[in-house]
Image 1: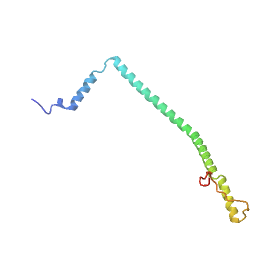
Image 2: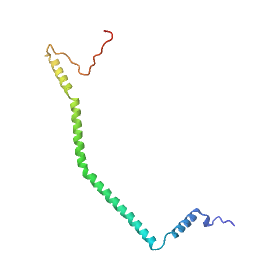
Image 3: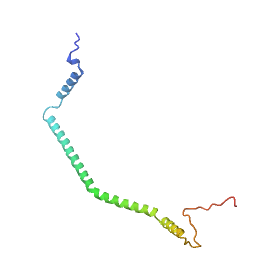
Image 4: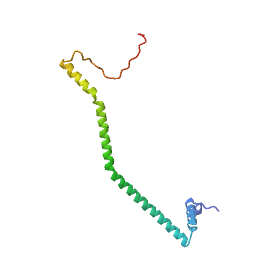
Length: 128
């Protein structure tokens, strides 16, 4: 008859039996053990090589940090100097000189006010 509590109908029991069958099929003898030892040695060697390479690149990165920081600092100073030159160029000087002359009242008769910028002369169709 059909027994509901039979362990052979349990999925976990069947999986364990399959694992047991596969374990019994593993290669026996001196070559099977030698392959297992060589596999573990190769795996251990790869772990050691990977760790050594990782430590090497870590130390290399740490050693390069001061040089990279120095170069970035110099580049930032260069960018700041270029921005300061662009922002405080001749426009600031001429504007300051104009204000000082205007408020003191000692403008020369021939000196004209100048608006700085880019201008384009267009041919006016109405005048033509």
